Amino acid sequence: MNVSIAGLIVQADAAISGLGHAPSTDMQYRWAWSQFEKFCSREGIDEFTEDVVALYLQAVAAEHREGRIKEWKRKLLRKSVLVLSEVVGTGTYQWGLRALDTTNLSR
Image (tube, rainbow, N blue to C red; front, side):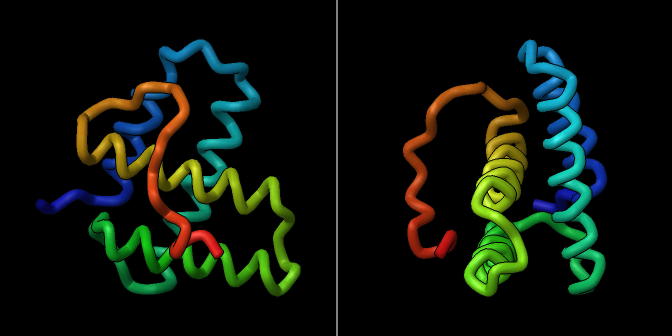
């Protein structure tokens, strides 16, 4: 499956726009997706895959461990990329609690 990162972000943004979030929440997701897009650009990645998600989450976790980002930001960056994963898998996003096993990826 060939999913461009830029196209996916546009699709995810549309998927969350109807959920009734505060404008600040939407802006936080947009900022977080821009960080993912910058990471992918630095790494020479232009296609979204679960391997890319794993690599990104490992990098975010390392930044947190090394004290370069706070816990709330780690959580936001993690959640934002999981939203992208759901949009890839389902074409949409449903707000709610997720029982995703990412324990090895987020530490």
